[in-house]
Image 1: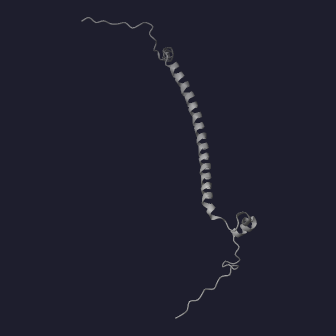
Image 2 (image 1 turned 45 degrees about the vertical axis):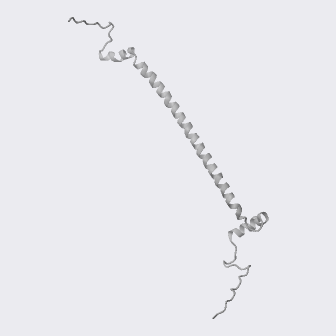
Image 3 (image 1 turned 60 degrees about the vertical axis):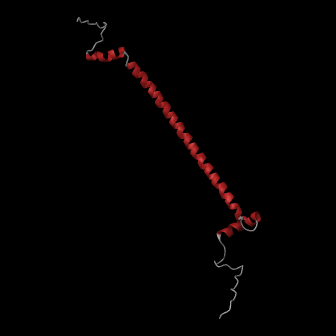
Length: 126
């Protein structure tokens, strides 16, 4: 039977992926992140940060949507005012054209004249 043996330990300086330089290590070197955050990035701050970022995005989206809605309401109110003015003008014209004197002027070319005498009541004997 064979004996148990220990695996060879990997040296800390060597890496399995070539030179060991990736984008995060380059950013860490250029921005001196270790001086600000210490050794490594504190992962326990990520959920509150993402929560605050999500709330900020929701706030921005809500504000944008509210402003668009206000613009649409103002445009609609202006259209309603224009239509109301048109309706008022049309009602005034209709009221003027439905007067008896205006109707008489319009039907005069057809040969229909207005009666100046009141109607007579006919009584029948039984």
